[in-house]
Image (cartoon, rainbow, N blue to C red; front, side, top):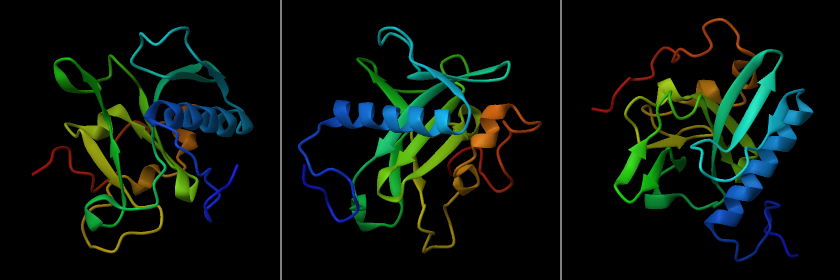
Amino acid sequence: MRTRNNGIPKSPFGDKRRGELAELAFTYRAASLGFGVAKPYGESHHYDLLVQYGRQLHRIQVKSVFTTKHRGGGSGFAIVVCRHSYRGSIRYSREDIDFIAAFVAPHDAWYLIPVEALSDRQSIRLYPAGKKKTYGGYFEDYREAWHLLKGEEGAREAPAGVPQSLP
């Protein structure tokens, strides 16, 4: 299979297939770091994977972006952090999931974001290569934050500077 110059397979994969690849990438990375990972039977849950560390168990919803082009000509990568139903877009809550695991494939970067930190957002923008503007970048503290899945004290609070709602 041919690859682009960034190592990502060049293929006609659809959203479903790219989502499956992101789940596999998460499973590999998490297992490599000593976490237990399980996939629930069927697709009727709001989470994709369960992650265990010691007695801690977390429900993970994996989101990803594989493109190297920035939508809207801006910097950063947009990730949709809501689910869709016949009623439209629905934000995830603590009852649905514990963390969003956002994968920016061109940078092989993972963001482990507690659902509470998303507040009322339906999408977020991530800057694994650094941001060019003075605003934004609210979720950079969650980049490669695998320690949050280990249940460290205060891990679920939003870092300083993360607005709790959009203006």
